[in-house]
Image 1 (tube, helix red, strand yellow):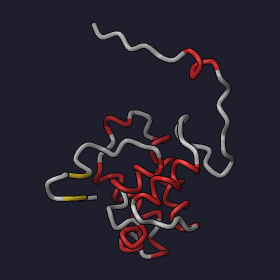
Image 2 (image 1 turned 180 degrees about the vertical axis):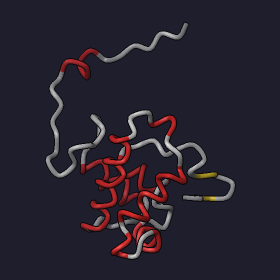
Image 3 (image 1 turned 120 degrees about the vertical axis):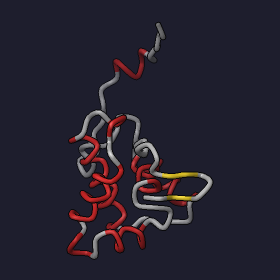
Image 4 (image 1 turned 90 degrees about the vertical axis):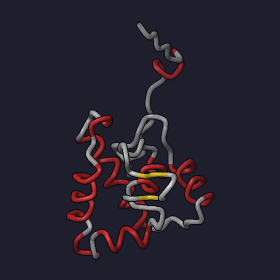
Amino acid sequence: MIHISSDINKLTRERTVDPAFPHAPDDWNRQQALDIARGEGLEMTEAHWEAVRALQTYYAQHEDAAKINPRDLHDALDEHFHPQGGLKHLYLLFPGGPIAQGCRIAGLKAPFMASDRSFGSVS
């Protein structure tokens, strides 16, 4: 049996929720996202933040992140951003892949097979 210990300070502190990102992971904040984006050569715009919110909302609605299907997530993002151009719009925002790169910035674990280091991003 594997024993997973948790930092009691993380468990007892009250979570501070950014009202613009109500579904953000507990350990995520905008500054971290900005640092990751900057490190990947992205300048965050409101369109980027909307994609981050969409990813975080999708993950919140599908609580078992280990079972998130990249194809379903891809389709949900395409539908959500259809008025702006769908996936084409998202790939312009996140050249490293709207799922793989977007999840890194959103503080989420990308679904299994969302990226393959030998071939680059597939999502």
